[in-house]
Image (tube, rainbow, N blue to C red; front, side, top):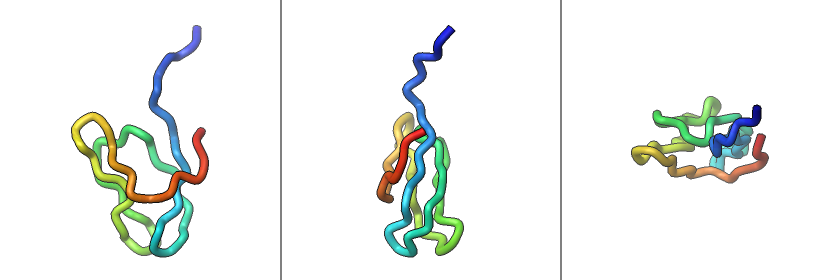
Length: 58
């Protein structure tokens, strides 16, 4: 049985410090960079607004 979920894990690159971090594509909370504390992901009620460069999709 295959899953038809469209949610993915993403590796993003912080625009401020270039740190790579793995996040969930449909996060329901704000996600900040662990190194410099810049906001990377903002929840918009169902979809997320990604404010970083997507480096890889898992």
